[in-house]
Length: 178
Image (cartoon, rainbow, N blue to C red; front, top):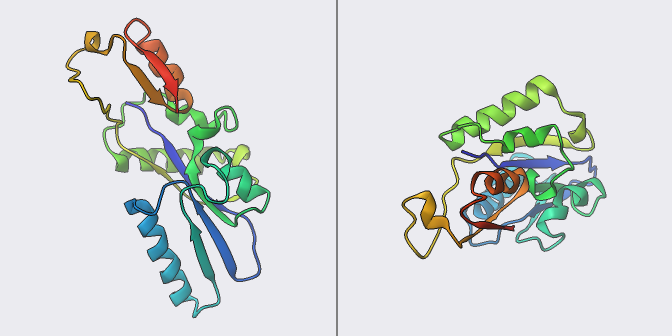
């Protein structure tokens, strides 16, 4: 099972107004949660901190979210580490098939890793939190019950997951980077 880790990070902004960049569209639960968090932060700071949420890669595409925060295009970014393969070589270890069975276990793993190793590759930002999701699910139009059913299918995936899946399924299907 593969973990894809998400990062929420920010750089120092002293204006009290912040732009939060989300890679997912408004229709997702994750984006609606960001709006609720932004409103709660504004309420708890008595309006001193106001966050505008920009969903669906409206300020930068998903694979440029982290760099957008570093360069000041947005103040807060929420993206997938695997979208920038090679940028976080130490942290990419969590993309390996580690056997995590739940999103909670994946999230604990990535946060324990971060706490223990303090990877310098994330020093450009202040990490707010790291999130891992549960095992991925293949979505297909045709039933897939055994490895042979993958023959001729294309798999879309990200980061090291593509490398791992390409190796695991090399005789059955091809991959399409996502």
